[in-house]
View 1 (cartoon, one colour):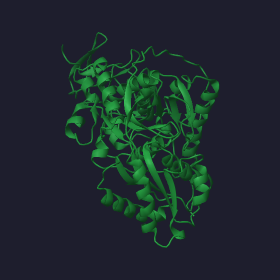
View 2 (spheres, rainbow, N blue to C red; view 1 turned 135 degrees about the vertical axis):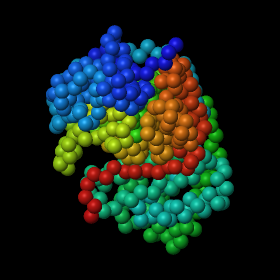
View 3 (tube, rainbow, N blue to C red; view 1 turned 60 degrees about the vertical axis):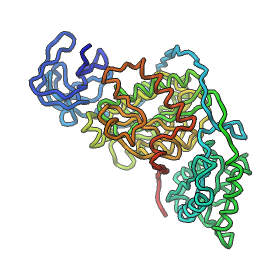
View 4 (cartoon, rainbow, N blue to C red; view 1 turned 90 degrees about the vertical axis):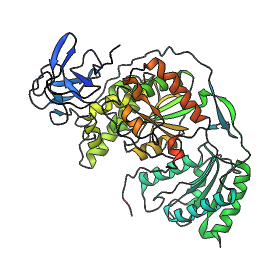
Length: 497
């Protein structure tokens, strides 16, 4: 069977996506019509398949991705130079619910996790130091170094300090964002034990912060206020030795996959993202939801242009209204800073074939499959509902990935067409959209969805991908963990005193 060299995603589309580079003068046959390519067009980019007048919409994924800036002819290369976003300010929306049945059987799969005292499950058993303020980052790093030296990195999966620059000189909502994310990290089940490390005089007052944790396991989460002790290293190591003795006794047990919570993220996207890696992750998300598990989609600015698809999948009108607020609040955030809402695609996105924010968003939302939306969360909220959830956070890779982990996701599935090495404080699996990236950056990429443009079918690939994710959940290291690339980033939205 001859391998396809282009793809028409939806019958209504006015463009096709080149799966391989096209030369000027090359002829492609679409819907029984022969079209001559008018310019050299890179792989991942769009070729117009019918004449379009200036101002008319161009359709991809069955939806408008912007309008033509000039008269265009069939065969033209469509890119950011001749296509402009339709996005502007906030909008009013109408709830038109769509209830699509997944019809996916329960496979009764399990993974090997750590069952915590409160019944929650972690996929890692790590010791974490969480600074309440950036002033003690150095102390936290020294303590980690000393504990690793004493334990020879044995007995637990890892030992980390999650340093950041905040916790003081912040006001109101901005300050609460920091406190919520740090609280969420302390309570995350991937930690077998946590040392909360404070200076003492910061805005994020340590005793008040500990009250935010609620009914926490006081044997596994301890506080050290460094201004209250003579030798913070000596006291800190005494506490860490106690925590290590407890955490090092934890063992993995089989738990149902319904306990798994997965974050959905993309970055360094290209023209293949919406036709390979994101749909693959969407298939996994639907499978996980059908098993009783949980997936979370974020990057609100990268929903602009595709938001009605998500709104109409909300199971209740209340969730619909929450989604409308989430979208319009983020648009107002942009507008309040004098920034347009549609200027999102990065230089790398454009080079990879993404021309407008609608183009990006319609590909981005493929990651959450077709499941109904069962929950909507504000930034810093913790997961309450199984199934597909939406989370308010920006598109920035590290901020969004941290937000996904903070809400309670055990790991993050991160699709990428350009490649990226980073990871947040939970395993951050990279799924390549194209075979070139997967072959060149083997040290970054955990799974190649580029196989879908090399002849593999989605039906073949989905079971392999499920097995891979469950292997990582059961202890196999993601590439970011192998490389020791792990950090956090907290959303900054306010003045600094």
